[in-house]
Length: 83
Length: 157
Image (cartoon, rainbow over all chains, first blue to last red; front, side, top):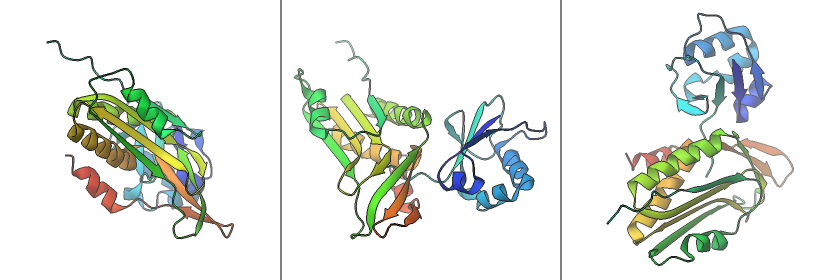
């Protein structure tokens, strides 16, 4: 699955995108965040304030309990500050 | 009388500057049904002389798609004759343009409200992030989202 990071999430993770093979047990956004946090300190730092992190699946905003389903691209980013 | 054709919003995400007056004219020229044209331009402030620039990061693809989803809601909620949204990315100096919304309608209320609605949701839903660059040369860090922007967006629900 392709995972993209933006703004300070990107800076903390240290890459702007990566493709990961996920275990079958990872079925929701929240599972994915837990999986990433357990895999490396960089993710633990980036997702420290987990509730503040926004998520998009295939470029649509979703909540953390959303199933990953057949998603091709996940994106994690801080609350938006455009406009 | 048949319903008017649905309005197709013009949406652009670009690093180049835009000409607000030109974009507004495009929504009015050659028509006689436009009675109200609201143009909102958001500019980069220097925050009391502190900033040398704002750097806007965006999520290419999703930025356009999300703005289109917001614009679609605006077009179904108000009887607009035209809607243009331009959002810039990259490094923007104080005094320069960041975002443009032009809403056209037969009557003023729809044009005012649609432009206001677009800006509230551009701020809270469109995937853009601002980083401050200081005159002192250092990078100050990311602008934090403001609760008041979420409150503003809730006015429409």
